[in-house]
Length: 241
Ligand code: APR
Ligand code: ZN
Image (cartoon, rainbow, N blue to C red):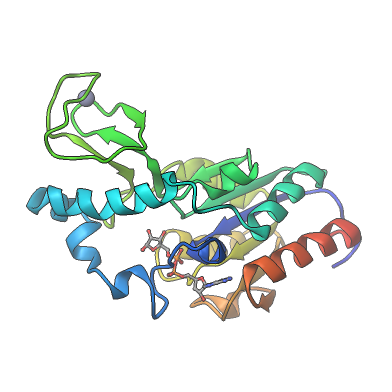
């Protein structure tokens, strides 16, 4: 790191940052996709084919999050410290649908894959805060349609949210940090290439092990997020970019 203390930072996070809070990742050996087929629960076709199955899958994960037994960890909190103390803008773009970044205190945050604790009506598009179970018989309070309420989660084959705002931030950043993601799912996995098209932003991967895109980052540190993310933030705040 040099002496630069200005410039905007974009931080991409994935399931790995929430692992030590007790939430499963997707592609680790004990991950979610080792227990259930994503084609059965995380695609628009699955929801048409068997909506009750999809609701069960998300109801279980939403209940876990709403239960209060899952807390933000030191890595989430380190990103809140960075947002508070870094002179430039710090934007967290998360692929995660848990609410641990906001519960830790992150404010400048984009959930590009949606949020567990929200539901959306397929008929009228209204988005509701939602902690309870979803089911096929529910009626939308806004338009009265029944059967159209779905998790406000981006499924495979659907367009992630706020992509324009994300690409504008990637093009304008001085530092891009990727934390706890395997680099398997686009468009998030392509953000590193978008940054490399720009003029000289630094790129860092912080992960338990090298991701698919590891070789595309200038520097990398490997280890559990609760250990390497606070240390990275401390160094960035004391030594600059
Ligand atoms: N600390 C840091 N990194 C960790 C930790 C940890 N304690 N535990 C696991 N990891 C790393 C793994 O090594 C892996 O590289 O986190 C990454 C998790 O990768 P995935 O399970 O593929 O999760 P993610 O990259 O977030 O998946 C992206 O895929 O299924 C879709 O929509 C879903 O948002 C998700 C997207
Ligand atoms: Zn509606």
